[in-house]
Amino acid sequence: MTTAVGIQSLAYEELAPRITAVVEELTPVGAVVLVVSKGDEDLVRFDGRSGWHFPRAATGQYAGHHPLDGKWAVEHLEGLRALGGAYLVLPATYYWWFDHYPELELHLRGRYERLGTPEELCRIYRLLDLPAATPRVVPDFAQREQQRRCLPAMRALVQGLIPDDEVVLVWSEGDDDLLALERQAWHFPHDATGRHAQPEGDGARQVSQLRTLAHNGVHFLLLPAASLWTLTRRPALAAYLEKDCRRLALRERVCVVYELNGQLRSSTRNALRPKEAAWQ
Image (cartoon, rainbow, N blue to C red; front, side):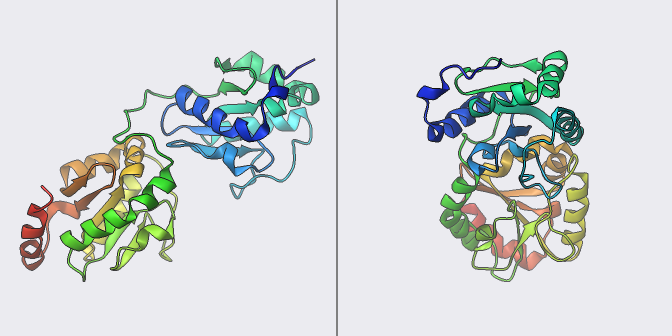
């Protein structure tokens, strides 16, 4: 019989932040972390990692139900693992799952490494072996909150550096608030309708999109500091920005601004020069 040692003395509202701390300590930046939940967003909110509900619907939301049976739970786990799920987190409040779905416990015990975690908090299983992650460029913060907190500083930097008639691409993770730069700003990456698109692969597709946009007159890309870790997962994009683009400004804990392809119209370059000098 599986027991939840010590969890009666730990209030539920304390679990999420403490589990978050454990997950961020034991898993690399960029990992996809599956979390057994009933749709509680606090349980899948990690800094620098993608948290997925388990079970998970095809839309990416909580599936709305517990596994139908143990076999279904195992098949669902392996399906999400095939999509990149690297870790499974079982909060202490869900230890009863192993009594209810013994096939899942046997599957995990027989195939995957269990990490050392406080039993009163959670159990974590490593589903994939990931390469060591490059250290984050900036200190750990709650990504979206940190980005919004830095918005005034990003806006001031853009206003002082980039001409008013230029379009700014923003690595935004779909947060429309980050487009409030008092000039035309677009999500990046984006689909044909201009809506934010989830980046895929090593960044080669994003490089292709940037080259096309640059050819069509879009010259600037802004990466909020809290999103810089994404470059460690997209080496093709990182190489393009480093080799083919020009870094106009770097404000620690705020953002980085790149000039795509490192080439602009002479009138724009002249307009940038005195303003850029102020940020060096």
